[in-house]
Image 1 (cartoon, rainbow, N blue to C red):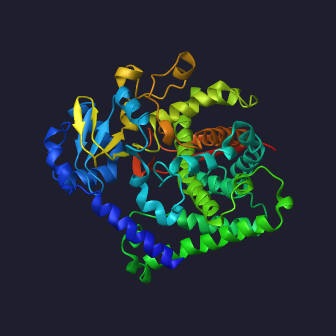
Image 2: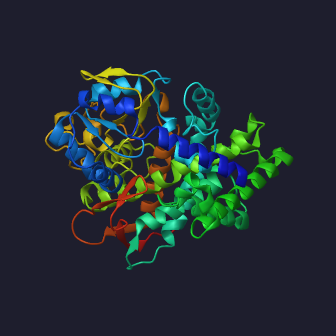
Image 3: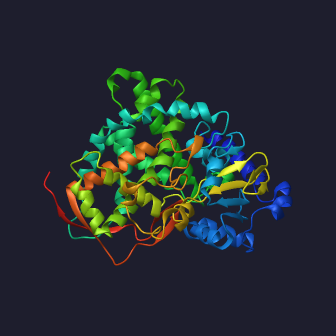
Length: 457
């Protein structure tokens, strides 16, 4: 394990070095690229890393639909707001528009077989291998367990005392992942795995330094980062071995069982499990927190959701999900690194540049969504078809999030479960602000709420 960490760390370091803004071929072409800020690279990098939920939209408003940012590492970036430009990127040849290289720092966590870090031609078979567990009919079989867990979680919340919903959605979605997705239903083993995975998922930007400089793994606090990952791996491999020894005991529809059906390699399955954790746990938890935050500050929308709780396919609940992700996107950009020059929007972009569809900017553009583009109004999803390539919280094209349908099902099911168990009210005046956490945009105050009353089971 330690030797694997060292080798992947070295590889990550090389990727960062070769992809940085110091690439002379890229530097020589910068004067022919789209306009952008003249601020120092350090300032552009800081604003991109710390407050991109505001920075990207600000840059588009100032410089237009295509904006060049000089950011390290992996820059320069070209931000995209025009849906047609975004469509060209999503439909572009996978061997030209690389997404995996931009996730190279995740290799030590998700592994070398992850769909997050692979590019063409290896990406397609890896993606195909992970698709069966996410078929609609298989996802539908998991909703009953999700609903029960959401109700039990909500009934444990104290009445009349403020809570941070983000903390509760983090815990709930992780429990759903361990018990429903991974199928670990024995309480003691589930608790141990949840604890281990929570420590792995809670990595920060400074923790990533250990993958770039393996020697740091001998020192605190990076020593704990390595130990946490090794402990999580031990538990995952033990669970895989347990399933393989007695496969007939696990005639169930959880995702881990499905992954094991046709995959003989334990390392591949381990990487797929960790990919689900990194790609699906935090993003779903944050989406849930924002959805509740928006509903609690829009009582009429909340009342309409309550009216449809008995309908498992209430279209308004789906509209609320889409609208919450539109006005409060969890991720503010996706990235594709060019392996060869392309023409886009009248500019010739050189190889080595990364093009970034700006999710928050395109989803709040008044030219596409009307004068109320920044308002939370779920009804818009019942009134007509949204602009193409203007709602992209799950990316698009060959790299569109595999778990998009699963995430929507989970969020809508948890929403229904919580609201059927308790009545909630907002705590504090006005909308909650936002803050960057890793690469996600979270409610600044944790989506504070209070339980008014519990409903009887």
